[in-house]
Image 1: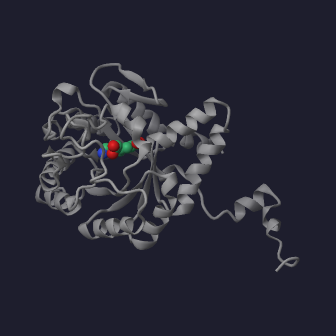
Image 2: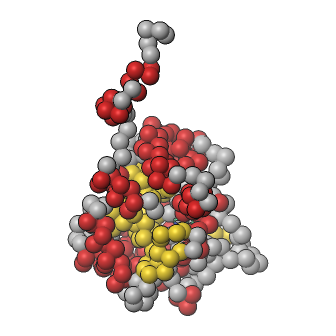
Image 3: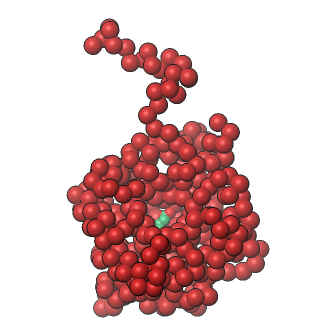
Length: 331
Ligand code: PBG
């Protein structure tokens, strides 16, 4: 009790503060999301995500080399599909020569040690912008899971280390696990987006991939029948426990900052590494505030990343990964 106990004593110098720091951030914590497009020499900046690009596969090679030099170890790939290749079933998603499959091979050919994680959901391939197959005004669960299995196997065949289902269909983890095993991909892992909320913070991402749900009759206008209600907490634990039981290797919570309580709850409930996705809208907000001079950019994003770790995240998928790696190398 005060005055015997003075908490400020351990805060008196930088050295002492470092000594008693409970959480640390390292380059091994990061997963780097990357957007790929068809073409050659393409490096288009995404308007709502300054400093993030859609890149063609030749540019991807350079990017991977930069990431390796920064000691970053994992990328999470998203492919922007040409409109002509979209349909309701997402058939392009398991085309062995599809953009995603070629992107996986490009990363592995550039550096075989770079871990490749791939987004598994139909939205970039769907004419309706939904994560699953649409019929009768609904997003169908079981037929979508079948499609996701084909997609996952096709990513594994191209060389993916982990597939990352982000669709929120029920039962997809066990079915994907079985499909991978049946094809001999027993070592390909599953990072499950276990608690993914129907969030406003995905806006810039949907711009990046042109994957927003379309506005048409008999097409669900949003993703609320599969992504979770932001008001729910216990449901997130249920989702996480079910995915753990179904064989997921890593569980993810998404978005990040508004859901730190969920990160902690999930971390306490499971025996798996927990990842968090610091999503596009969060990235955009910080950039917008910094551009106006209303916030100190570097201190703010580093604080956010640290807080994910403190909340219980073992891994962070973040668009700040490269900058953070550069910072950590020199500090
Ligand atoms: C696709 C997917 C989304 C994100 C990752 N995978 C968008 C969505 O569900 O609509 C969002 C990532 C971000 O906002 O940075 N299923």
